Every structure is written in C-alpha cells, then in structure tokens.
Length: 482
Image (cartoon, rainbow, N blue to C red):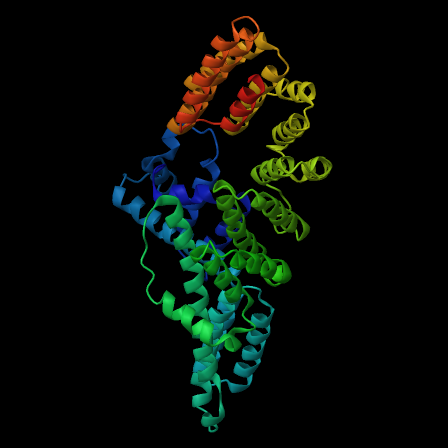
C-alpha cells in the first residue's frame, strides 16, 4: 500500500489539508462509506510515523478494517479505490476554491436553467464587478467569454432579445483572449528556440501581428496584450533597438497594472535581451541591465512573497560591481539581507559581500570572508574558490595560490553535481592559472627573450582554448606581466 497512488497523494498534503480531507471524507454529503473513513484514519495515523513497515501493507489495513475476517485482496483494493477518488475530489475542490469566479459562473448557469431572472441578473452583475478588478487580462477575457455566453443565452430567451449586446462582447473577449495568448505563447516559443535550438511552428502569428498593426485603436486598453506585442517585436527584430526601449518604457509605466508574477516574467525577457547584447559585445547594455534590475527593485516585482531569491541577489551584485556602483551595491546587500530565504541567507550574504570587497580591490577582506565560510551550494563553492584563487595571485601569496589549485582540482574531481562543461572550463582555468603563476615566478630570473617567448606561448594557448572560465582575468594578468 505504501507504493499506491492513494498513499502518495496523501503524503503530498500539508497537515492542515489532511484535516480538511478528513472533514470531506466524513461528510455524509460526499461520502457515506464507513470503511473508507476508517481507512483514512488508519493511514493518517501511521503515514508520517516510524511505525513498523508491516503496518503499511494491504494485509495490515484489511485487518484494521475487517478484524476476524479472512484477508480478501479485492475488498481492500475496492476501499482504497473509493478513498482515492475522494482524495482526488478534495484536490479538485482545493483548486475550485482558488478560482471563485468559476463557482459564480456555475451558479449563474444554474439560475438561468431554473428561469430565475431576478437572481440571474444579480449574479451577473457580481461577476462583472469581479472581472473588472482582475489584473490578469487573459483570465478576464477567458471568463468574460463564458459570462457573455450565459448572458446571451439568457437574454435570447427574453422578449427584447435583439437589443442585447452579449454576443458582440462574447466575440470581443474571444478575439482578445486568442490574440493575447497567441503572443504570450509565441514569445515563449521564440525564447526557447534560442536556448535549445529547436524550431516551432507558429501559424497565424503573422496574421495576428498584421491585424494588430492595422487596428491599434481596438486594443488601446489591452495593456498585457500590448506588452507582449512589444516583447515579440524585440525578440523577432533584435537589431532594431527601438523595440527594446519601447518595451522597457512600457513595462515601467504600466507595471502596476500587471499581476506580479506576470510582470516578473516580462521583465525577464528584457533582462535576457540585455544579456544577449552584452554577450555580443555591446557593453552599453550592462548599464541597461542594471537599470532593469533597479526598476524591478523599485516596483518590488522582483520579490516573491516578500523573498528575494539568492540568484537575483547574486546577479544584481555582479552587475552593480561591474558598473563600479560600489556604494549602491553595499547598500543593496545590507538592505536585502533580511529579505533572503533564511536557509540561504548567510551563504548568499557572505559570498556577495566578499565579491564587493574583491571588486573594490579590498582583497584581504574578501579573502577573510571566503575562507571562513563552508559553501555547500555548488555554484557558491565554484565562485568562492575561483575568487580565492585570484585573490591569492593578486596578493602574491603564491604558496596559498598553489595549494588552492590542488584543493580546487580535488573539489572538481569529487563533486558529482558538476557538469562536464563546468568541469572542463574550470579545469582549464586551473591549468592556465598555474602556468601564469609559474611564469610570474620566473620574471626577472630568466632572460627577457625567454620570458617573452613563454608568455606569448601562454597567450596563444589561452586564445585558442574555447572552453575556459574567467578568461578576461587571465588576459589582464598576462598584460600586467608583459
């Protein structure tokens, strides 16, 4: 029974949800089958306990339900099947409660079918008020279409049927729902195709864009639709930078009109656009990426339930330090420290404060922070060890530097979570950093000609190696030696 669907689903429920499930199973409206009630009580009693494994068997459950009776596997299976259906019904009701407008529409449908005109119109007005308050245009058009369908059916049964506009509103909702979601899905398809190199089919997208271009007046109030249209333009015409500027301006001006999760996703498109430009050599987009992050912080869209993710925290520090916005960065690190998830707070704070010190050339402060913390997360571990390696080199602590080379190499070999790519780029960094430090030790010891030949050979090797991390740091250090 432990490997059954019933057992697995109950395990997914929180303690509070299990109490609510018990209320449903024991409610005579939903269930009059006492054996399923007894089985649920039995499972809830043992499910999180350290009880003997034999108690989790079908035989043990059968003995609890039917004492003094011979074991019948089909009988216990039947009880389990019934209880499973009740658990699934509970999950349906949980989702139903999250969508109150669905219940209102079902009520509207029942009132119409029972010819209760007075209460139908009351319920209709209540739904319209709720739809006006929603920030999700997609949901507004989705449920608006269902509402107008019911209203159209109702008013067609009345005497003044020709005067009602429900069918036009129904059509408008359908058009806007389709166009919005066509743009939304198309943006995601284009985004994914840039990552995994797969080509998706997007029929009617050109026709939809032509329609939007030809009739802008029809969609002037559709802020979410217009935002996705600007995203689509930026994705499909990346060389026309006016599309990006139009997108980020529109998002900043209308962010309060969007659901926070939706807005965060749309800003992600703007961030990815900037990152691609930076990677293609357009360094001015680093400042624009910084501005995107500052906008996310200003309008608080970046926070999820009041929490800033450790990765957003790290990315913002990285961008701010590259822009040499050190004072701003320090204020950001301190202000947002309590807003990090407590499970990652100390690591994230210490790591990013060390990165700020390193960027400010406060190498000893950075080294102290990084040496005193054990980073359990893979990427913090890689980042911390890389920064320590660079710090030891820049402080001329070459004994510590060569020890870190060995420690880092052991870390790469033993950590099972490191991908093949991460292993290769970091191994190459260690190989070239060791050669660089060895060459640094030779400066002034060997002849200038011999030194220059070794340095040029090292430069050539690094330039010809594609998979290597921190290559800019290596090149900078070589330039210092030359």
